[in-house]
Structures are given as structure tokens and as C-alpha cells.
Image 1 (cartoon, rainbow, N blue to C red):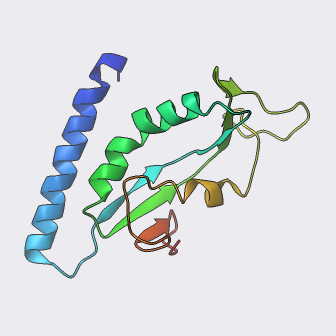
Image 2 (image 1 turned 30 degrees about the horizontal axis):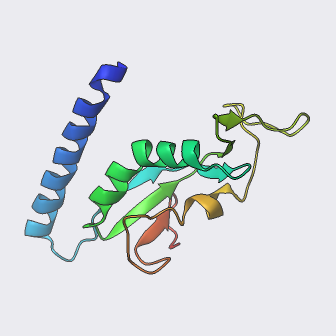
Length: 135
């Protein structure tokens, strides 16, 4: 996918999800409907969260807003990244890294799960980890 195509693809995915949700609920209103989104545990080094916040807005906001009308949202988490006011801060030397080059941090799922700026449900309500466990 080319960068210029990303909005059109996301528009199609959004329309497809809304249509699927409506079709499922029309036939099985009792069946929970939702989707999973990959969320990085984004941290801030220093006092400027601008890069991190812009990334969250550009990458997650659309999907979290779409999930607002769903019964659940699954959280897939594969990494934790730290941002300063300029960009991504590399992991310290000697820290074990994953295949993407970011530091291995098992607790990153805990940090990624609460990212719900458009969701006023209480923490844990309707949220699932990738393997389906309630969050």
C-alpha cells in the first residue's frame, strides 16, 4: 500500500466494519461485535508529549472512535516505544530487542490497554486482549 492510499483503504475498512456490524446485529443482536487493533505502549521521555500524542491521533483515533459503538475492542500489543519532542528514542544499549528492534518489555500490554481516549466505558469493560481474555 502506498502512503497516498492509506486514507482510502482505511475508509473502506471502516465502511466494511460498519456494514458487517449492522448485518450481524440484524440477525444476531445477542452476538458481541468488535475488532482488534494493534496498539504500541507509547511512553514519553522528558516533558514534551507532542510526537507521541500526534502519533496516537494519526494512528489510533479513527479506530478507537469506530469501536465506540462496538461491544468490545481487542488489543494487540507487540512493543513499547519511547518518544521525546523530536521522535522515537532508541532503547538503551544492551537491552534485549525484538525482531522490530524495539526493547523487549513484557509489561507493554498493560500500558497499551488503557489507551481509550474516545471510550467512556469503565476500564476493562468490553476490552479484550488478543487471546480473548477480558482486560
